[in-house]
Image (cartoon, rainbow, N blue to C red; front, side):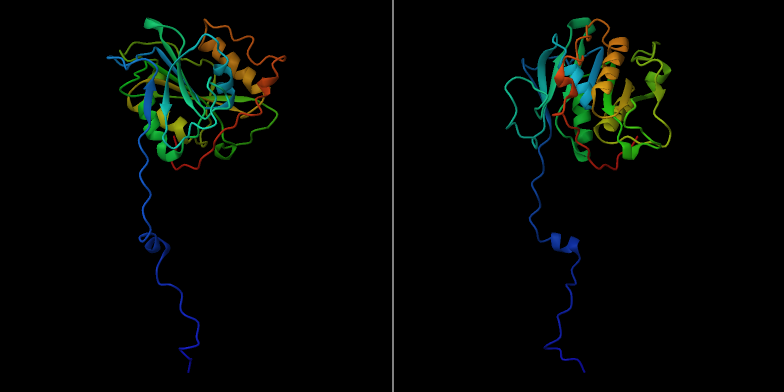
Length: 271
């Protein structure tokens, strides 16, 4: 007969989720918000093109366009301001909004230099493409995650692919009129590969609102060759009136941008 006094006690009959019921729940995060440098306009911004940079190469190229004007920022309460410089820098954890030109042909640039988790992606996408910013066309620039790509990506070769909303593929604007594809000649993202996170949320937002949206993904995630490829793509198809020739040239040592990092997150949201 077992000695109940000296026998080891049985394991806890509580599951981990039951034990969590006794812990104080964390405070909910505040919603992200948009802050503009001038008083909030009565009418929403209606750019003809909204370019959202998520990848390191696209951040580098757009950061070095000298003619842009800072008009606002997207604020995430979980991202501290400490460590950011006074002037916009590639080393900051920030999300700044810039204007390239005025009035009828307004182009907005959004440089997402802070990590955005999967849980916050939908909220951020609704702010950038929502009531305060209503674009006619959207271009999202991101990098390919090798673990999500069906196939082999050689580290010494550059690749670029695209995904489009139905409105962009049909060549329709908000009024049902036709128009050419924004990134003509690019291959589509291979079937069986997946994209997640903020890029997927932004493209899904465009699809739901019937906006002409294009998601362009490049490989590798860092390096001078991919910077040159992204710069050429923007100069040829998107930013025709801007001289990008001096950005990331051989004399510019910072074009190696060793200090810029991407922020991968696990996500269950795919497109």
